[in-house]
Length: 249
Image (cartoon, rainbow, N blue to C red):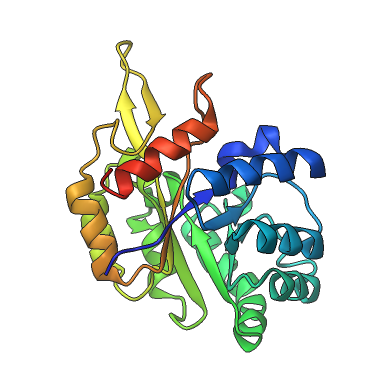
């Protein structure tokens, strides 16, 4: 299996703050070779975005930022318009950050997950690093995995943040076989002042020869390249270089 590689548009959020900017930026994304995108970090009308993506040959496969608890019916409507099967949470509210909070999160979100499932969509949880902390001996991430319904909840594994937390990313992916519908490819590099930084895929120190096959074995459907910060470099070119690495060019 070869996982289709898409662009996480959060990378380009600063240049996508108006319809004109969105159209210009997505045109570049299509031109450098991406077919799949994740919408995150900017606002848009679903019907307008679908028409633009259709014209450019782009397909939305995941979003972050929807009001899942407050307006699930409109979330479902917009994702149907976009043709997007996965509805994600990009970060956890601080009120949930404990072992008890993990279970409260599941209680609060499961009804919305069920509605998404009934509509043919699926909820996805995206990690940062803190989810791998232990609360009274229980690791937050493990609670989410063990106490969620695989039919209702998938896990968008972010390689950088899992690695940052000291996890073996390949082993994590293999342990979540059948639970990873989408993932985030994100590399890490150490600069000379001992600072950990985001990096173009292949420019950093992460073991992609082990990580990519592990995601393939886990059944991942889409991998989205994401750079939270490009440190002054052109984010479009950074996405292009990442895609070339993933395609072996």
